Image (tube, rainbow, N blue to C red; front, side):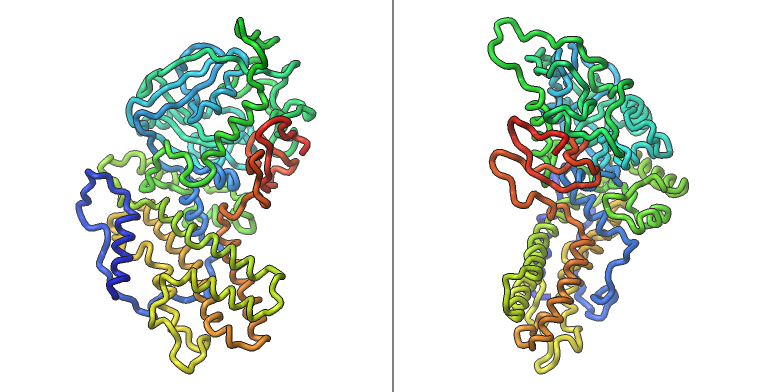
Length: 563
């Protein structure tokens, strides 16, 4: 292997392994390079990904950890992951009295999220973690009170089945989770609605009060209504439609985070106060806005994910769920049809992960960064190729094909050695073995030298998902490159056929990958608005399955439920 290729592998080793200064691995993480056999299995590019495979789904879950946008777009979470919050982290709790919770309750990462829960008599508790907090993270929109599957993984863990009648029973849910987590020393759980939150089991253990302030109350419209109760409400309070699988909050049994009742009248402003009070719609928007700060990578950085404990229901050996997913879109994936046997396997795996000795640290490979590197390298390039293939701006097919060829060359440049060309005078498509090294390096560079024995079972599953995702990306790009190699010399019919083949190949690849980076407001939003994807409880469309992003105003008048 040439020296420059070896240097690339060494660069990968330095950049992709999360190593604290005190970390000295007991044995080498990377094995020695042994060369390439162009005829080895796994290099075929005529065999598409298995439709029952889950490499793309696990890859997406890993790449989306602690990011609000992808976990909103694909709201039915399928993974439960060990995580920590470091000492010195400030968290917030809004309430209607000045008491510190003495039972399991919620904490917000940003003040704006907590502020909306203090309502009229407004107290906000600021707390700091005095040690590392040990948590489990439920991915997806796992705090969304819906009947579409957002809470499936929690229900299965604590009740052994999905409990649709308990969609608003968060008080019971947090108590059951905390009771279950005691045996593993868990301090709480991380979930997400329109922002991330911590379900903390004991406010007196590992937390200190920084301040408990009686803040200026939020002005509430009169007469008072619960958000979503009246379909004619204006402002953000009316965003959630009172129909479909997202029913409005019932008149009884409110979420225990919320005030148990609404005062007959809002409190007066502080003595000496002049002018308007904070507006309820504005504060509701700011809570949503604060959540949007964590839309994309690196996401909510105050939670540190331990990928060595990444347990997922997308394990493709869970046969009951493989069958349940057939014919359904990513958004429609549920856990309610899991068999008792498969559920037992997942819970056993999760309990084994949580009971591990802390010295079992896995490989310390930063799998989240690896998935992001792959998305960053390929995401926009696949988009521009799709645009070039679909645009009507070209009147010359050969020029259009040449532009696509140029983009393929850019995408595959790191892997095209001087020997990766067909023999002189031969057809590039007659014998495609010349392209095997391109396929190999494209699909294997990220992980091929990581020693399998240093990976946990969960990391091996992630590694296989990365390999499977890269294999499909590189299979398609290499196949397109084989056809594009001599396309600038081809006749009109051959060029037209190639363009159609590429459209089908690329369209199939992008649909299979289904990266949330490709979902955004188009055209982009101006300075007076933010790009918003429908999030419980703020639905801007009567169809809860319509996840089309749109621009919403940063200031009054705010959007209403009728838009």
